[in-house]
Image 1 (spheres, protein in one colour):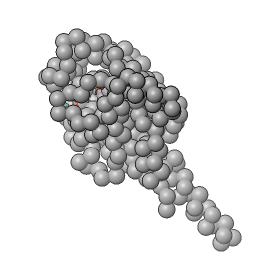
Image 2: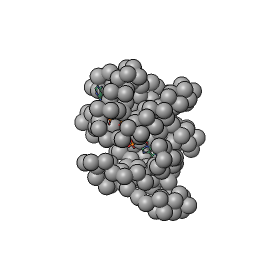
Image 3: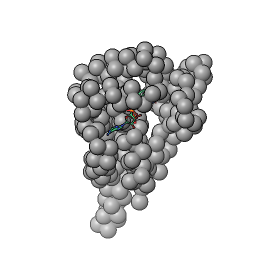
Length: 208
Ligand code: ADP
Ligand code: 5GP
């Protein structure tokens, strides 16, 4: 029977721990597919092209927007980021649950295009802790840290009306477990189950 995968959107301030939680989630669950985004930002040390992101030039990225290859895209901290459409659609129809790690403008567009998506926002235990995590990662310049914190403040104001769930990332394992519980519920929601319901109804009609 053909069960449709769940589209799980994860957002939250830069440095809150989205990537760390997603890695933990992948250790816990083998039905997940991570949507590798495209970006025009420079790779960080240790980031692999095609694994963490597909790194593109501005010209390549804009070409992909024009040809409709992006499900959604946004500018964040001076760079383009976007979700490739075809892989997401293919994996959902194969029954895989697809995880997007995207910022709020992208989440808003995904919700508009695919209202059945579940939107989860990760909160820091405190703003002080968020600053510590962002600085402690040692991946950003001072200017980039302050730009990311500034963006975080404005995102936090907009998030309450858009997202379905809010999870405080105090302990990574606890946050990942809560997301796994949300996924489990969504896996028997009507969007995921509609093909199965249709098939059972057809069988019932054939009996009648
Ligand atoms: P994001 O993907 O949201 O930008 P990362 O996953 O890169 O954030 O995490 C930022 C930093 O915070 C990393 O150094 C990570 O190890 C650390 N971190 C993540 N979650 C926690 C947590 N629950 N407690 C303490 N440190 C954390
Ligand atoms: P980073 O540069 O720290 O990897 O990511 C910066 C921000 O871009 C994060 O909030 C992340 O969720 C977001 N992001 C990553 N990929 C995408 C994407 O494909 N689309 C959108 N809209 N945002 C993305």
